[in-house]
Length: 121
Image (tube, rainbow, N blue to C red):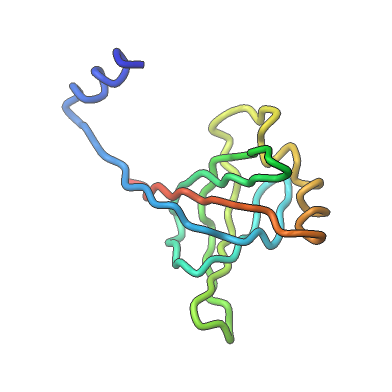
């Protein structure tokens, strides 16, 4: 890990990533993506990690924001449509693997979600 970091830091084309955490509410989810609601505006094309905590277990996947729409009648609410990115094979903690379970559970009770964003360069 340290050797890899040294290689990255020594590169001529070094770039950086700005990250922020955005709290969201899961509205809908499928095997290919999800719809979340947030009070923070997120730009289309933003890449991030969506983490969902259900019954003390964390599930996560990389996502790309495909669309953003302001919620009418709300003072500061946005619907964010995101697609799952196939950056890794969906493991046992992948949101894609538990999408149908989450569809049922979000209808019954709230789940805790964190969405860390990374703006594309």
